[in-house]
Image (spheres, rainbow, N blue to C red):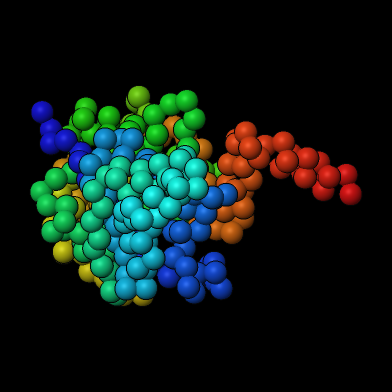
Length: 293
């Protein structure tokens, strides 16, 4: 039996320059989809996959994230005194649903470096990596992290979450080369090609912000030389890991929003608002009014 997946790592130290000026004073990960910060969706995903500890990678400029996840009983009591029982329960649940550990990345030296910063906090265990720019929803089914945990429980191997992208988008992503055709939505990884031209791409399966990694990744990260911009790339470490142990590619089920992009963020906000009973009719009416102008 393989070690249980108990931990998840969420990198949240980046500066979020694509959302300036809002992110000058506010962490990008705290920007809300309607009224829920995007980071909350990532944490919920991990908790529902059975994770007990969330390791948030932050910087000194992201202390507002710690405030969001800390318990404030005085505020809870104030809400209760005003009859706002639901709101009080929501903020209590945010602070108590899982253990939150903070690791600081004080230099922006790439995703691989960020993950390496968590080596001590993760220890000798498998762990999930959830990238905040990728908001993935699978209504009526297992979330993407739960799906990947199931693959790990079957194989004991690292898993990379992927989906096919449109041909015109292949050159924007890390693309997977497989050792065989997908079976039960998974196959062993042969290679990863970063942003290839469509005509030379080994597939259209793109890595989309979800990884389940064995602790062997840390040895590879420690030996990965910085690449472009002096950054340590996680993909480089995964490629060398795949030469030593099995790494699976998994074609996950779910709708992905790129909330690190302004349009993707707006798209998610509209879609999530339309799913809410308290907002659906108003938003639909507004859209109809705009279309009729």
